Image 1 (tube, rainbow, N blue to C red):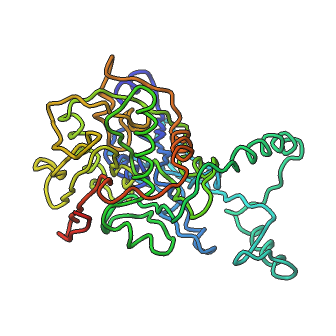
Image 2: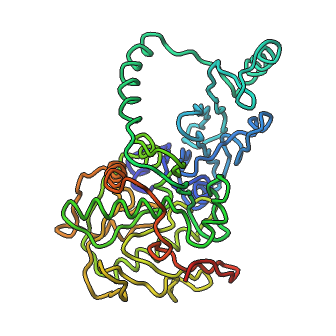
Image 3: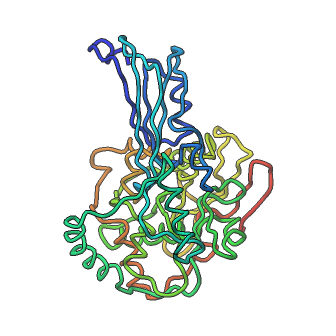
Length: 398
């Protein structure tokens, strides 16, 4: 901030990807910051939405104070372009914020439904009137010319996405963290109880797919995947290309890293620490792996080591993890850049780092094509074997 001030900068706007609660912490801790526009936690802001049955994490924008005691405006526009965030800010001649204003606008089409059934008649008219009267809801119609252009690509995507590549005999449940901390567990029947001990089947399955893909293209010993990088479970039935890209919707590629065991262990411990630092926002950092398994004890400190009994799959059997040995580790480029608590991966440079340019969603497609039938990894293959929660309660397989 001192450098910016020296260059004559009066107004500082931070664009962040650390979550709403972390943004509020940043606002209090930093000097000279005026506005924070954030993401990652997919927080809906705007208490006005509660009248429509939506739960808001806070007001839009949220007024906070920075370390200097000056006003800071914190905003986030939910997720997936569902909301347009409009900020209306006032500054004094010195560049300090004097007022945080604006509103979030939730975009709606004309296809209005209740319990899956289209609204008609008086019920539809009442709904439309309520929408039109709200300052935070807005109906929109597609631009005809843009729609014609998009329809060409929409059909190509539909054909591409509908290709069946495998069969799923039972749902691959999604869950970020074992135990009592998860805020995004799968709502499908039976998934919550089934994933309490070892976490998401889909996250574990994705790690296996990444390791398999890297093994085919240059080799790898271990795959590491952050829980939040997987966004959908797989329903029972056909597994299509589209399902893979819904589960792994980001444009991530696979990065291969040569790491000492001690480095990798430190990275995994960092990821657990990051998750624990703010469990409401950072659950996406919880680590999953293929080719590696461990026990987690949250009652221990970072210095004591929360990961215990770490074992490596050598292709034939599990063996003790060797912190002095070098391993080939594959991870998506998001965490390989140090995000989500994986700062240690970003410190691997030079000849020890290779971007394979392999698409991580394509790895899931290729894994499905090869397997034909997709099942949850067996319990002994999942990275979290035992999980001791903060309250001392034990979950898990071993």
